[in-house]
Image 1 (tube, helix red, strand yellow):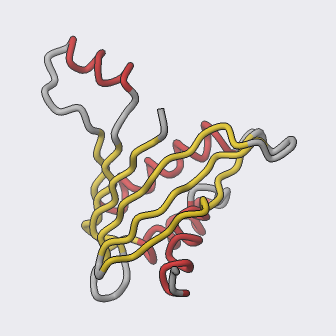
Image 2 (cartoon, one colour):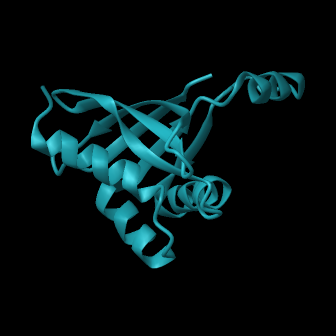
Amino acid sequence: MTDSTTRDLVARYVGVWGLSDAGERRKAIEMLWVESGTHVLQPSEEIRTAAAGLGFVASTLEATGYDELEARVARTYEEFVAGGEYSFRPGAYAVRLKDVVRFDWEMVAAAGGEVVGGGQEVVVVGPDQRIIADYQFPNP
């Protein structure tokens, strides 16, 4: 069972990716993450292969701090949500173990609500319940 604090965190987290207003989005980011918070994305196999071909050893993408987090969230909004084709919603799974929360999220088509993507998130939260580290694992 997931407690209401965890459900609220998951709902706010997934919701931030769909905010159209830049000011509202920035405020939500500051309420979700600590100032030095980090979002680490495991990119697709295609991106990892291309990076390796260029000599990059690290195969993760990272955004740290409010400005980089805002750019990351805004880019995702513009690519997937702004056109009205998709939205994001929490998945069925969410669990918390002390300061770690693991949950699923889904990207759904606006027309019909079909799940067209998704992934799993693992976040570490501080005493104030804001995210310190955020690890995203999109489904292949």
